[in-house]
Image (cartoon, rainbow, N blue to C red):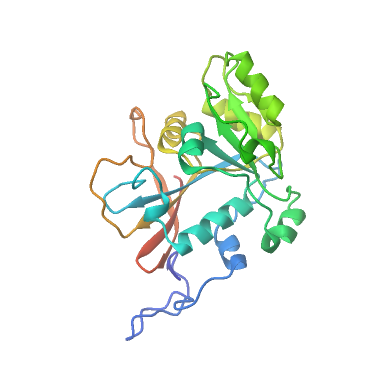
Length: 267
C-alpha cells in the first residue's frame, strides 16, 4: 500500500525497483487504515451527522459484475470495507442490496473493540435497511440475531402488517418519510436522533443516487478497480440526474496492486 495523495515527506518518489517510501511493499495495519479514514472530529457544538458512502467501480464504470460487487473487489478493498464499518455507528443500505448481497449483521471485531468503546460506540454498527415496501425476509439473521438491533427505515404509509412483521422479528422500525418512501434528509436526521452521527452507506446505486439528489452525502470513499467488464451493469449511483452536478474535492488516495482507494469530500 502506498499513499499517492496528499503528498507528504513520506510520499517518496518510486525507487528504481518500482516501490516508494510510503509503506510500499507491506500491508497497512488496521490502526493505520482507521487513522486514514477517521471521521471528522466533533466541533464546539458537539457531533453532527456525517454521511459517507463506500463503493467500488471498474475502470469502465461498472459497480457490479453478475449482480454483485465482490468480483470487482480485492482483499485490500475488503480490509478497507471492514475498517469503514468498524468506524461507523450505523451502516445504511437499500433493501435491494440486502436481498442481492445476502446481508448479515455486522460483527464485533476484537481489533477495534477498544477504539469503539473509547468513542462511546456499541460493539458493532447497527444495520439500517431503507425500504418502502418492507419486502424483506424477516427470518434472516440480519433481523433475528444481530448483535445490535437492525433498523428498518420506511415511510409513514408503510403497510402495517409488514411493519408488525419487522418488529416481531426484533427490528426497530424508524419512520423517515411522510408517504410510502424514505426521505434521505429525514433518514439522516432520524438516525442522528438515535445517536448515530457517524453514518456509512454501502448503496446500492439506487439508494446512493437518492442521497446524492437530496444533497445529504458528505463523503465518497470510492475504490477504482483496475478491471474492464463492458456490459450494462449499474454505475455506483442511479436514478434521475441532478440539475447541477455536485462538486467534490479529493481528500486522499491510496494505491495497491493497481487498485486506487480514494476519498472525496463535499467541496
